[in-house]
Image (cartoon, rainbow, N blue to C red; front, side):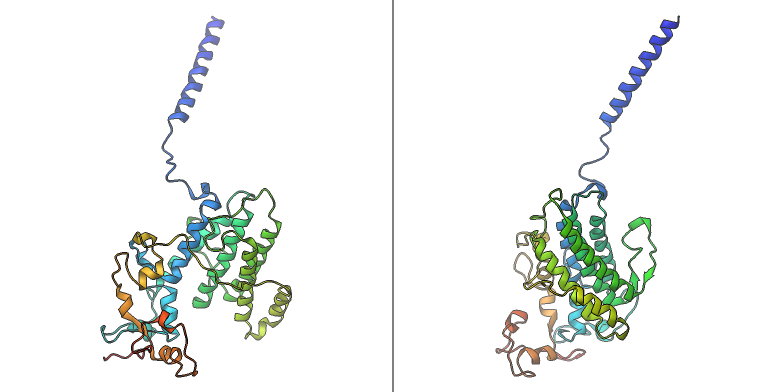
Length: 340
């Protein structure tokens, strides 16, 4: 009897093991096409993080990014620096909110929303649980400082220390803009140190870097340049002079970027989603048709006078690449002008 009981338990154990194995084998509900963010390594995330973040500046005409069609940093900055005007020859009340600085909760709110969503992508790369991606993490850290500066410059105090955590913290506290600036400098220093300490175990950065093609020396130079810009931006603050001088001493002998830093994952004109987002917003569609903004946005009289050499006596050779010339001149409209 005792032997029979042992045999029964042995059979049950085998059946249980087979059942568990079959259950694991048949568990195919985790789609490889929908992986968790934590499962995607930095080298497979960097290109998208670089490209998507930049759309907050350029604007984007794609349906999937409709929230930044007319809410980009590029457009707001060009209007507020008196370079762009709404074409009052064809539109009544063009850019009325921008001209009157009609600030409310929805005024260019996509800059804030889109920037924070995509800064979170960069932050998550830095948090990836592996020591084999120091170079990729450093690039994400540098870009995090680069883009976060725009948020601070535009809004002042903003969430930073508790931000970028997604559902883990949906109400992050606001940090003082001065503290954020210092944190961005520290972040750049840490990124440069991470690049310097990377070893043969770290994955090399290649074509997934659509900005500097994995040239880590260039990334160090870019980080130094961003740091210098952060320090110069604070140079008028008497309370920051000691700190600024100390940080500038650290940059003594540093190499800075000397060429354009661009983003190009392979933009072309074969499909709407492949177009350069700036061109797709302000130029032509893939069929060659002029987009609304091509005629809606024109030069201001202020910009025209500078480009034509009226103010400086020097004609800007780039003017025909910025605006369509009329009679060999840039013709501008005074911001707020409502008549033809």
